Image (cartoon, rainbow, N blue to C red; front, top):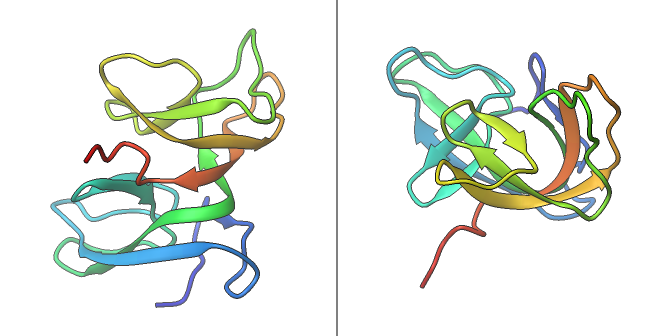
Amino acid sequence: MPLGGNDFRLRTAPGEGIYAPITFTAGEGGVEAGDMVNVGDVYGIVPKDADSGNDAVCIYRAERVMVPCATATTSLFTVGEKVYLDTDTGLVTDTTNSNTVLIGIVTAASSVGDTQVEIDLDGTLNIVA
């Protein structure tokens, strides 16, 4: 399945670094490019729209990818900072709570008002043996 779509910016091109996709069946309502999803025990980002019942792709590992984040109003995401996926909102945040899972680190600083942040995505970090 080719990569691309609205609001999705994979900055790790195939063959240029770590990039790991898995295929899953889109649930009710389908998925849109840029959505953060949970597939089994992993979390990742959807690179291309898929209708309900169709095959969809989840990128669960990418060295550099732009992901939707909670809009920074007073503080910024800083390089090397841990980031979490808020499973209620589907947005990446730097705050941990009972609804968040660790998914990576920031690879490029953000500015106040940004709605996306570049991270090193590893959707397997929440798996505990």
